[in-house]
Length: 171
Image (cartoon, rainbow, N blue to C red; front, side):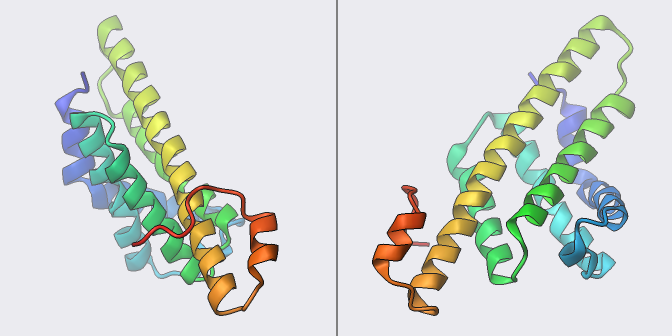
């Protein structure tokens, strides 16, 4: 069971967590595309992920919710010409924000609380790992669609390099 304080923080303080994420983005020289966004946009984007995480921590893993959210993010970032490596790195920074909160701000005043926190960190890690999986699927699906329609790449060539099961799904 996940402590309600963590779930409340993810929901109520999503913008505060996103502000910490934004600061981490600003310090990462690898994130040139994200670095070009203004602070308010970064905070807005970052704040969207924490309520989804809170819902999954509260109600259990919902692959449809998680998959839809991250696949859409991947498609959107591909359409905005973000490199997939930057998007995954940025998502990883979101995970670090949550883990830092749990390890520093969540009161670990007993052995039981420490074990609870470790369990939550494992669930957070699973959320972000699956999130990156679905994000990559969405990104690659958008790439495939763009290449087949806009760039007129042959079906044969596309099938040679895109060997996944996610193509041709309707939005």
